[in-house]
Image 1 (tube, rainbow, N blue to C red):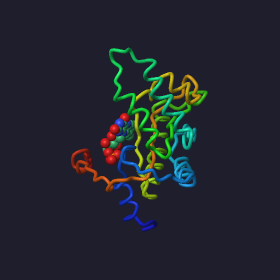
Image 2: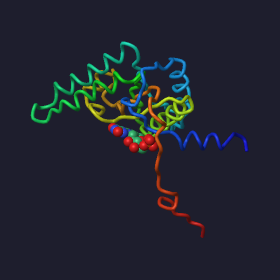
Image 3: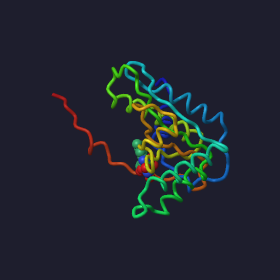
Image 4: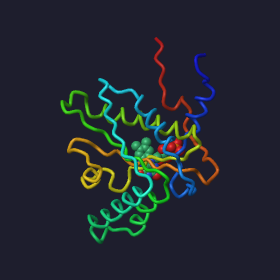
Length: 195
Ligand SMILES: Cc1cc2nc3c(=O)[nH]c(=O)nc-3n(C[C@H](O)[C@H](O)[C@H](O)COP(=O)(O)O)c2cc1C
């Protein structure tokens, strides 16, 4: 065995989504975030395009994100479908986090690699970040709600037309017992072809 597989298994299987309302006030050090980003960049990427782009909000940046997300939601939502609960959530999600990373895909100029593969590569990078966060004992969750896929979000993040925001990755120290996961056994999703 080249690596300690039992520890790797444990990190992978114990990675959980931990939500901002479950975070404590304790601040996450920038070095931890840098380590997560460092591991993100080692994700597989077809043609080595490395299509990921991460915008990190921390400190006063969180207020900026919270304000943008909730106020823009208010501005673009017709009054009959506007939900105060959603407005509050878009604000509190950022403010209850220690760090929020906007997950983005930067489209290659020549568009040689299919877009879906660029998105897949970014998702692999996010998994690397999430596993690293788990190893640090940090809570994190990939949220794709709110204005994630809107033009307003794209502009806010400084993305170009063909780039995509894929979500917000909320990070903080958990203030709860580590959540238990649940998955179907491999028989449910595997077909073996042996002859
Ligand atoms: C691409 C993607 C988008 C997600 N968006 C949301 C979301 O908008 N809201 C949410 O509550 N969870 C979201 N999640 C987290 C999932 O709900 C979570 O991974 C799932 O419930 C399994 O729990 P676990 O991560 O603890 O194993 C998202 C996960 C992925 C991979």
